[in-house]
Length: 447
Ligand code: UDX
Image (tube, rainbow, N blue to C red; front, side):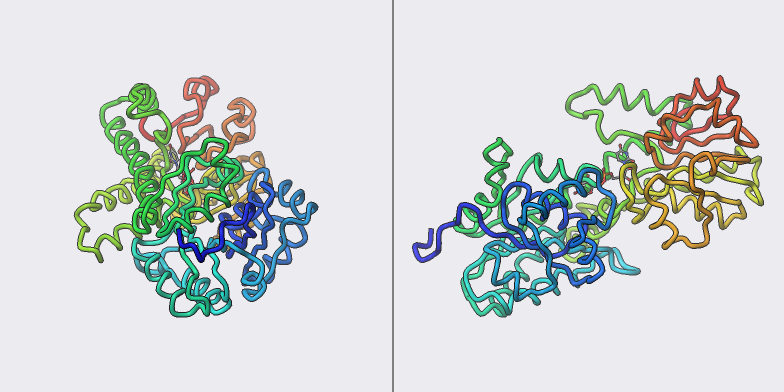
């Protein structure tokens, strides 16, 4: 270790730049673990909400924890880079890296803005930690940026990808499967070990890597998960052609511990703010690096996934005898997955919009995502409850598997609809039970 470097404080003071899903959860959880934390955002409206103790998105358990840590005085919010630079020993960059409009590649403008806004204020040795999902090679560029723009020439960088799932964000942050620490020096490693001491002490595995590996771990993990989902969805296509049942197939192959049953749920496929854009950004970066062949299968993973949406529309159309025109269709689900209000790249809303364009009278219901859905799809109609959505429907389409939809009684729902037609887009209902109640039941990958 550099003898001139200060040792890691037992409890480094932490700043978190970007208060989206990742940043808010990280800031709140670090405060819960006993650290003093300051969260920064450039969005004044978001800061007002957070200061008032309101989480600006739906995430189970997070509002309670925010109130708790604010009460304890360990978390506050600011829009001032000067303030966080003065305060923190370790800065986490948690801003978004969305897909660029009209391109596969990731848009790094927010990452670049965060680093170049912070750097000029760094006048003592601190650690800046990238958590955002970025294309390989970004960390080295950000390191150069810090070297050229920070007044202190000893500022260091680390990369520490985050794997939290929406809906389980608190649990995943407090009890991660693993910690990946992309560092250049022992000093940086020690700062991170001090920051993550509670997790490390409770046995969380630590994987020490270089920058490029740390950047790649995240996209590799998400590519693997996306591939697993598209694999079972490809099998669903074969099952439909052969009369087989993809849910039984998944159960059977999932017993093989090498394969595993998780992430083998066939249906409408993946959406959200991570999997789709991460595999596309990976394809784009591999092209730049001249290794596009290595990930060309990801094009197919994406194509299989998007085909699911078209197939669900076809199934619905078959149940409506070939025409959507003026048919009443209840779409149950708008979020990209249950226990979330996130509608980014939501398969459910994509399907709802597609059948709306074909002339159907679509009524969408979701327990949490309606406000977000209304903003992005103002032309769709929305219902205040599942029962309101299905009233007089010619077709019910279950497209996001919220518990409340899985538990629906086919008899009760049957008394509300005009025709007992259901497409189970997530393979979560019991076909025998629905058919026994007089429904025509269709799903992806099973009869
Ligand atoms: C994902 C990764 O899991 C997480 O590690 C990463 O940090 C961010 O991206 P998230 O976007 O919250 O997390 O969603 P996830 O639970 O992974 O689900 C992704 C999508 O796949 C959802 O649309 C879900 O409905 C779909 N899915 C998941 C399936 O279609 N089938 C499955 O078996 C599992």
